[in-house]
Length: 299
Image (cartoon, rainbow, N blue to C red; front, side, top):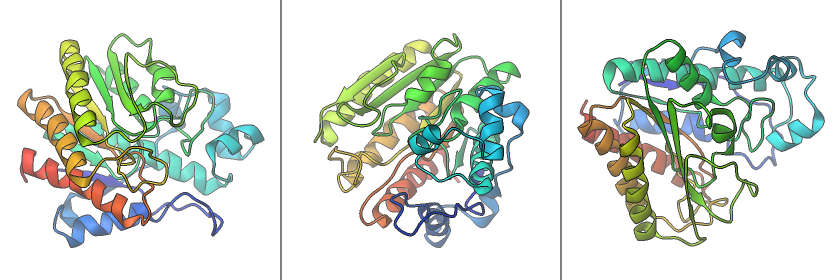
């Protein structure tokens, strides 16, 4: 199982910034220390080219992020101060997603220890998302005839408005987002299937609705899956508003990954959100997804 990482690109953030940038390296270390994956399975994410970014983003927006001439309002909506490191990190995030997708086609499953940047739109970013990794990788796979029908299963607690704004009219793609009804983004962009959960939803309500959503995904009969495995539905998450336990998230992963394995559908994992207090809880929840992946797909 190839797992791509890009934490060697870091952002110069203020000390009081609320985004837990350290979680990426913490997760990579946790996976190795706890023998969930091996050093041999880790791969450095390459930076994506501007040409491939343009599969999902406008040239003007790409250039503005590269040069720093990005509109101040867009930078505020992204939530990170501009730096060239922001461009590099964002390109590596997308590069890792694309390599993970190509690896999954060969090896059934692969992962990106970043990504799931589902709030990035064609001409702007927001919500800590600069470029949309799943949108770029999806368009690449379709353009190159590497797969025919892609399902995006987005279980981050925040609705994937950027996925929908970019990909909603692509006939080869089905987007399923299950998220918190009262959470960011407060103006949603409709997916092919949206399931909005009330604040405080627990394991049982989450899993019952997930089963409903997966039945709709099955009707689409995908030949590839991108799994946005955000763990911000965890009850300890600062930004989540839901009430899931580690056990609930593990059962969530088992449902999704078992569906992919039993139907021989390649699946690529994207990290998504996680903002628990302490952040070690998010790291453990992310790692649990990889534990489940190893259990279901084998070593």
